[in-house]
Length: 164
Length: 179
Image (cartoon, rainbow over all chains, first blue to last red; front, side, top):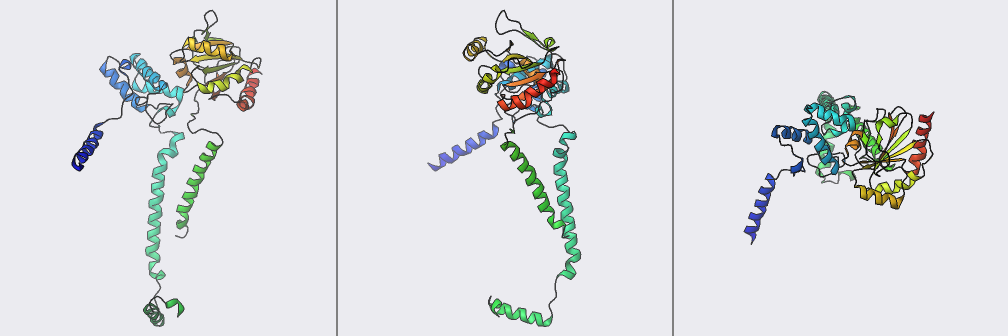
């Protein structure tokens, strides 16, 4: 009984590797021109569904996503470039409609923040280790003969040193 | 070197402060899913919509000229619109025309709904495919746009109006635009 179950689990595992995220694009939305449809798909993947907010309009089943997919195709048929289609939506919904935020004054912290933190961390680490190496010689205390004798005596008393 | 040792603590405090501030905003009712509108202070988009009730006038963006207008996107299938609806009925004679845009709705459904709940709108038009909604930047109903006498959007209410929002945001803005 165990073996078939294992095989089944393995098969399910293998199969799930092949499953692409389900597309919400409906057949009746698609354009007959495969080149335009491919462009519409590429654009749709970059646009945020404003209702679900973490899905692209190509992945979302929301009504608004459906309307936006139609709009993208409508703009493409009207002869817009990809950039113009995206700008059309940015003009109405703001940069938020783009899943990849553009680099501008509002997103400076977003784009440069991680690099800034990395530099801070590296800088901190460099200063820390340099300080330790430079200060290491004088910081490590050297015991006098008397002190080392006492230390040895303390260690020899098997942990009862604090009483001595 | 001693000072460097405090750097992680400082970073932690800065980050914790930032996250705490955002949490506080949410607690105050500032929804994280709220998207600020880029349409405010821009001219309202051009549109021309047919009336819901045959025989009544439709509405086009040209009719913004000379009057302060509140454009209210709503739908009979929208639950939050219900709570807002009663408040809208109390806004007659407050210095603006109230244009209702029935967003992606069936005409029979909205007629039945208005017969039950009352019709607060001066003009009622239908945006059946949601195209005008997209041009306004609507991403959920209800949403309302206050438009000045020159046809420029001056204020947006995302989500239903509350009595506080009407008192604190809408009416002062209307008074300002009517000056």
